[in-house]
Image 1 (cartoon, rainbow, N blue to C red):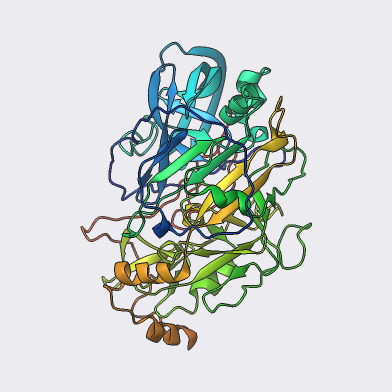
Image 2: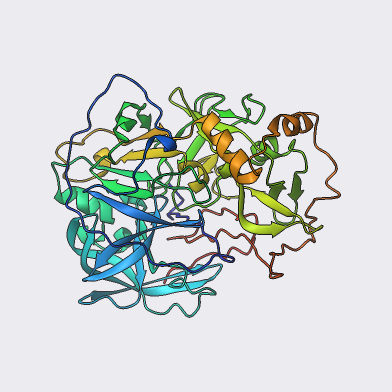
Length: 496
């Protein structure tokens, strides 16, 4: 809940991304199997899957530099690439939509990159083979206020995949057409199971054999053992309203394992969390995960050559420093691939002209995290390491099968040794000297004089142009105040 406002967050790179082709448009029929049971927990390594071909009932996800994940919808007969965001619940698109009906209800949202304004409209929508009539969405006709060309970035809208209670459009409309896309799909297919699954690929990992994929009421072939994983209870947020509900759950007690193999012990700011537990939100729209400052320091602070930028609020580390990190949920350990613990996607040079990587688990600065609703946002940097199943359960009206509480299941995808070998190949030129680097890190942090980014240092690309790795918050109402740590120019959105 959110003090009369709902909050959404979508992070992506504002500068330094190359334009790319739109995600492939695929048409599939949808099967609706039941969730089966199995007896054993099994790790599905990325190396165990050998196909890039999506199966019937599954649509492909396009990955842009590990910063944007995009699929296609059809709205009013027009195929539109949209960003996938489990952290919000509304649909908005740009451009013309054939046969759309304007409801005359205006909404204006201001972002760090400009203002998205328009009216709520309705049109027939198809997503993953499901069609709903008169789906409500925000039509943004004028994008001139944005400081970037979103179409050139490869997307022309956003689809929120979060709980229906978080929908701004739903608040404005008095009928079911205002419900979120997934709520509409599940409600009209009352005998199907109300779940979404998501598999995110990793660019820059030569051993990653599959593309990103998404499914509704369908399991992605080869990953069926996700149903064996613990059912993680979705933490119910109880504030003034239920509008700030997200896909969130608790870690195990002392459930964050740092580079030294020991738990990173942080006290939760959520009053109802047990000692040692932390409340985590899973958000596919967030590029860089957000963690408490003390946790970020524990991850990166003892790495040889690490430096913290006070002005930007982020860590940089040498790109060849392998950093181990794991999370525990329901008694299962979920290792994070070291290629996801630090990012080389920003082409950053330090003050001496040497390449450095950004520590992806950034110190959280969200005002709503300070209100005691959650501790951590696990975005793409974590979600690439799991196959996620999100069961909407009784969040959906008129459902005959799923009347239980919603839950999350996570299948671990990252094998520690395979990930180690990947990192050595990609970042260390195939020469494994991690043992030496680990000893230097354990000995304690070194002076950052030769490699640090001081608060006044600028980030410079190899071409000489400024390259700022920026996560832009795209809220549906006043945002979860999550700083990108590399851009502190957040603007409060307004609604009219």
